[in-house]
Image (cartoon, rainbow over all chains, first blue to last red):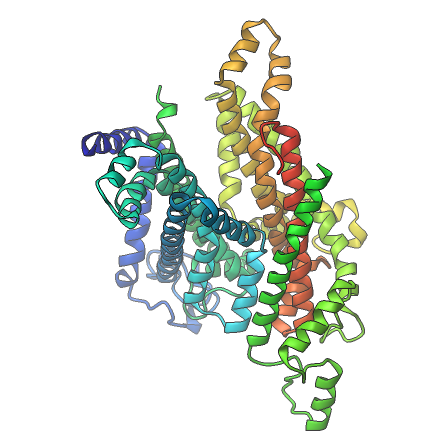
Length: 286
Length: 307
């Protein structure tokens, strides 16, 4: 069992590696991640360091403001790197929240089946029909702007689809012989779900997760645009972009640079997600 | 069919009730009330105001008042726009949002579906590449970046289209908002259609149809179109929800007097009744749309049985 399981993943990795768009995306994403981690320490400036003498300076190598400065003279290179940290952190944490809730919920629902399953799925349907973005907006207004809340709010929306996917996969898995065998040798339902069901649904989950991340980044920047995202002086790509929109005629780099990073990251995740899906789907093998 | 629709509508009632309770609770947890102005007011005035709006009664009673109003189509008075009721505000604003949203949805389908099918038929050609890369770009550029750039280019510099405003929904005023709103959905729909068309074209019954010697046109429209559209139809529910949310931003950028603007303004002003009214209205709209989409699905896919 473990032999064939490993070879499926090896197979997928081989196919993924031959997908040029996905490979380039991985490298580019790595570079952006590196910038997020190391960027702020490479520059002499601080992300919240206001300088009235250097307002809206164009990018230049000699001034040390490699990406220029914003309307109050803060260095955009450092701010872009800090923004990358926040945007990527929101994306990863929210997606992880969605993953944990969705996988466990979906697996239990699918494995237990029957009345429990239909009750649990009714709940998901119910949640689906709520205009969540509005709840998030109301939440932001009620409890104040708070990064933690953004994580939770976005994660709480995204787990629904995850739960549906995992449930579907679980139902088709649970009648297989190896599950029957596991039950026959006396494994507890919890063990069956955790050790045998969940590892086998990871493929589609991984694909969906990769494709969820860009959605989450987009949601965060949407909230930031409405003025409900992270709070000054902290920043995210969404905040930077919406600040850039206001200045786009006078200082186009303020819009261009963060938009470029935002778009490039979303591109990368989309390409990797598509690549993973093709790699894990035996149907597309030619 | 009729029974199914009635059943779904009845099934939506508890959901609506739950949404109302959630919104009501959330708004009342919020710190600060609608009459917390910067200037303090005399206690008697405040007590009178609270009494007028039933704010001095227990929460459950307040909810009861509210519920009985909503059932009669009365969302109560707006705390901030004192001369209007929430129902009037929604009545004014909704046609704007509706026109915007429906136009965007139609554009998304009319452009996205043919683009996706053509890309699938000419797979790996230059055309496919163009459609797919354009749609990928449409997916990754946020609306709030695209729309201001469009305004700058077509409104400010070329002066082809009005920069903002609604002007009773005149066509030139609609063009940019609708394009900006629909673009991400054009992109999604194109990608989904391409994927599903490719899958359908690989299936056996299409090969059979071709083997019988049917012309390609017939194979496509008679046999491939319907199943290829199924994922698009099931995407319509989330798409409608997304367009509703997206129009909040679009209405703000273009200064349109739609529902989204009232929602954000209401949330910021702590206009309890306005936010609740708009949320509940949106929720009802989405629930209704989900039912419509589910019913539409069964027309396309006879394998799906309504229960």
